Image (cartoon, rainbow, N blue to C red; front, top):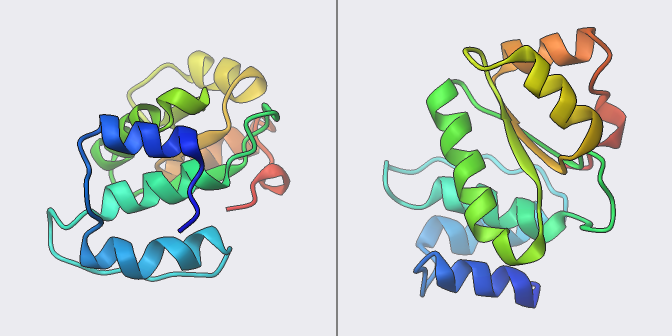
Amino acid sequence: MNLKDELLRGIYNYSFEKPSAIQQRAIRPIIEGRDVVAQAQSGTGKTSMIALASCQTVDTSSREVQVLILSPTRELAAQIDKVILAMGNYMSIQAHSCIGGKSVGEDIRKLENEVQVVSGTPGRVRDMIQREVYALDTSNY
């Protein structure tokens, strides 16, 4: 898959050795910028698939939001954020979960200054767009 060396270190550190079937099928098309609909049972590696593809596509020299991941629940958005931070640890990737129940002020500060990947719920992300804190035009994925 020609993954970045720093990402491979993060993957191994996260204790992954071999990609699951869903990961084998979906990671490459996501990295190539193609639209992907992936459906599989719980525990098959969908969250890791999204995190890995997101980390691979980030330009670490830029501090703009490049990847937006929308999730139906706060818990899933927070889980994706956690996995991205773990896998992207050696890449200095900055990620943030933009979800209800957390400080709006913190979301604004992070989105204006630091993050490359946002994992959020539709309601909070929409709020950040309406406040003109986040513009979709910087996101590639």
